[in-house]
Image 1: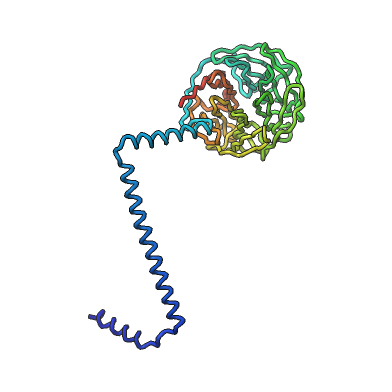
Image 2: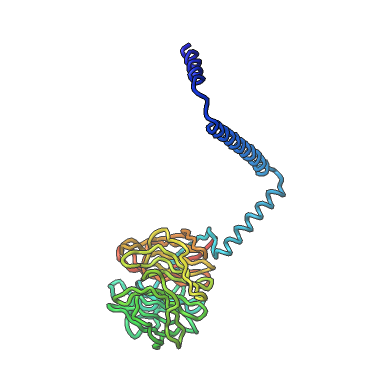
Length: 374
């Protein structure tokens, strides 16, 4: 009853107020019209959504075999086209097994493919932390020492061009500037010099030109990408945004992929692609975690990154990562044990991995063969 009494009282009080001015009345009328229009639009949208959901639901639940097959075919074709453009399947997997043994355990060796089935390991460090001068010829199943460098060194890089392997930089206590030609029989000849001494470098060959990425002079880390051909002088072809040492580098589809590395005291997650035809460097992705001292090799249009570690010298990882042309990163497999400072080289559609250092400081002599499946 109290409610019935209150409503008439409020009504009478409202009626006793003076009428609103014409301006206020017009404003209230416009507001009411606007509210009605908004309500009408909302109701129309709601009806359209309900009708669209009904149509899509009936199409999706249709039992017509021809319609379902054609939709599936279109989806499959799109996925295949995407994989071709990206240069790698998102479902690539790597199976890895031990297939041979090196003459000695070693890490930080330069590696280069000399033929579809054979590669060289040059220099490096043994279990006693002694730099090596050895040149080892190997396949996926066997290895033997065939020669020696003029001086022991480690943390150099090697690439193949114009019928021979070339070794760039390296060092022991200090960094070296020399470029050394290494023949298939283990003999060597001087072939030139880098603009500055440089160890901790990485390199790859594109169209007979070798590109040497980053490094360390012994005093200053480098952020250059040098280009070199036999008989010529190295010149700067590009720059990375920050100095890089121990980057994982491979060539695929006419471009360099540069992954991780050490910048200052920290491991990097950055993935870059360098196009020599334009001189353009593009950041295309990020590694799952900071990574340095890893090894990279390209096979079947995909760049694989093996092992490595973070900023800590005892943070070795077992991960094998696959990097597509677009920079997408997937975990493709696992090494038998976490390793950094290992060598990786493509052979006959596979990647052969050799040596390396584990988190306990043990240097390894295994030759591993990695086979990609999709």
